[in-house]
Image (cartoon, rainbow, N blue to C red; front, side, top):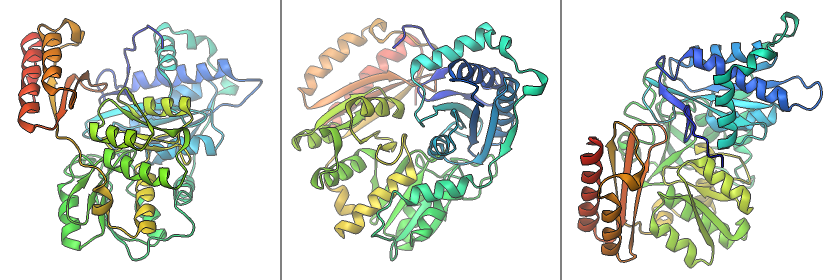
Length: 460
């Protein structure tokens, strides 16, 4: 990894309040130019460049879509506009349409006031740090201005009307052909986001009885009291309708959490355990490895290791999970938050596709989700967010290193402490897990207090 510091790109692309620095149309114009310039520099022969642009349902998506398109076309590359579609759909379409890159305009689970931009390479993988740093350099030094297209070579923008249908077929093909979802009632919460049209269609065409939530976006209601971060409405709907399970996506539909038939929530760690167990038993787990992040529960780690399978942790972010999976030749990984990656099917987290894999296991095993989710008992885990004025190396926060060491001794190897900065917000995240709920709360409070006193932040 380069030792240069990224200033625009965070854990998952560029993100901020829409129409305020850095998330402005002016920045997006420079970004479009820089990306197209970089691709032109690396193109082999007289290759006509194509870049896919998709978005979620935020009101501000229009300004970034147009600004990016203008920057790309100014460099002589063509733009393929696919409209509101899930982030994983853009990854798929980038490959499917033989494009050179894909851009997603979305702030994922954030409120509508925010927006963001993330980029996929031609193979549908998120860009590594080195590529993002190079794009930032091009945006700052103006080098791309030297390769503007002549008037006759300016690029064009095309609307791709059949893009949703392509993704629907792709997602359905990940579900076993010998199974259907007939006889299963599902409550599906699309968070008024990018999956609001395609995701219900996928489950319905496979035979499910689908009760929908969050499928009426108005540009401002994305993630509002719905979606994977706000599952109470999903839970109530499952219990009221007698559904077999609930499925909640986030704003760009790349993550998923579940609600079982009794109203209990099932997070990404339990989904990984369910899928890993099935893949181990049927011999489809490649690389004898499962990849997760620093945030995954210790109970999942113990479960995987007890199966004789390697357990690898990465930095937080599904792109880091994907990079580690590819390096190790394995096909299952994900995050506690619900980004689950099945590299046999796709290149990034896909909430709809992950839900289909869980449903396939339910059908084959003939078991309700509650029984499958009982495969592991998660350790109590407490996550506290500390809002900060500025970032400071954790080792330089007064008393923090000593507190971490002493409290790790208190956990006696039967718990974990993880402190990190958010990649998208001015927040430090303090996570403590262990068997004793009272103890982990004491430890978390001590760590938060040390950060607050030194940086002058407030806990939430």
